[in-house]
Amino acid sequence: MKPLRILIACAQAPLPDGTATGRWCYALIRGLVRRGHSVTALVACRDRAEAEAANDLFSGWGLQLSCYPAPLRNPLASKIEALRRPFSYIFSKEMIARYRTESTRDYDVFHIDGTFGAYLIPPSPDSRTVLHVQNLYCVDWPEDYCGNGQERIRRLLAVRAERRLIRCCRSVIAVTPQLARQVSLMNSGASVHFVPLALDPDQYVFIPKEKRPSRPVVSLIGSMDWFPSRSAAERLLRRLWPEIKRQRPDARLEITGRNARQALSDFLNQLDVEIQENVVSTQPYFEQATMLLYAPERGTGMKVKILEAFAMGVPVVTTPDGVEGLDTEDGVHAGIEETDQGLIDRALKLIADPAGQEKQRLAARRLLDTTYSPDPVLKRLEEVYGSFAPPGTLISDRRDTALSAP
Image 1 (cartoon, rainbow, N blue to C red):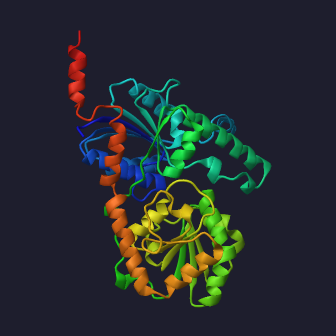
Image 2 (image 1 turned 90 degrees about the vertical axis):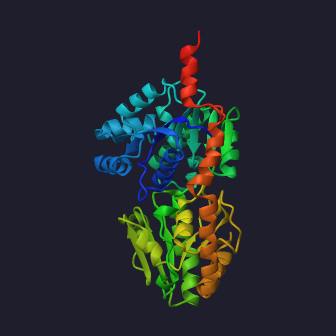
Image 3 (image 1 turned 135 degrees about the vertical axis):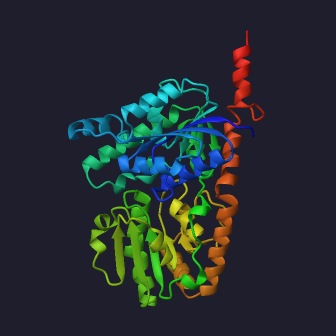
């Protein structure tokens, strides 16, 4: 494909050690620039420190990057805005105005990364606008998981906003086939494409065999602010770990994630259970894990922590939802089970089989390199972009033609 001029709007800072979405955005922007495209990226950041980190990281890369820290709002205004436009707090007025100005210019593609990034889109979206959907709150945030009336209202408003924003776009990218089918039901008039997420393998060191832990450590890593990860942690603690510990008294459980101690406060004093929250880096916790046991009972989209485990060579036991959108083979790239007993049996078998662990983690890393690294994923993304701009047309050719037209 010849170079395209692409405007990208990201709701998370594109940092290789940032949030799950931020790691994808890093791979996306870096990959598009390396493939020769002209990229302008507008990025919402949590604070000025995050904005400075992103600016420093991409300095000299040959792209236009503008970072916008989340605006400071008074508490009352924040509550009103949350009721009117859920999850819009991250976008400053400056970022919204800049996007709408840029969207009047001669780009080939307008890529909005994340459903709630659609708040940036003008009332009448350009036909070159594509919305990148990575999960659905209407599925991931079940009503029966809400603890009180206020949380139920927040969920209701978020789900309504999600549906409205998805319906405003004529072109949508979903990260799994299952998600694409669900989006098509929500917006039957849209052209919906399946393109998986990617991670940059250069950012992950495969753990050498000699540095793998000698004592069995069952691990779960994920943000407890995201309902699938929290439900997976509660399932592990309540229903899976007691039997694993009974059969393997030497095993230890380690759970790490955003607000994990707060969310899992009932489990803090269990024997051989360690819960860490808001750590600077999750890499040390991957390095000391015998396996990642991640068993969500529901949850849409690709699970970045599964991809990270593949990248670093940590064997995975999970559910079908845990490997949604991945071309994984059960017993080769991961142990995949639905029932509690099946997950327990897989975990115990893997603990007792170091040779099997080695085969699985090598196969999973190969899968990441060949299928879920930037080049193969961005090639598929370019095919979607090609529906907006003819693949053989240079941007400069389009401008020259426009200028010379009578």
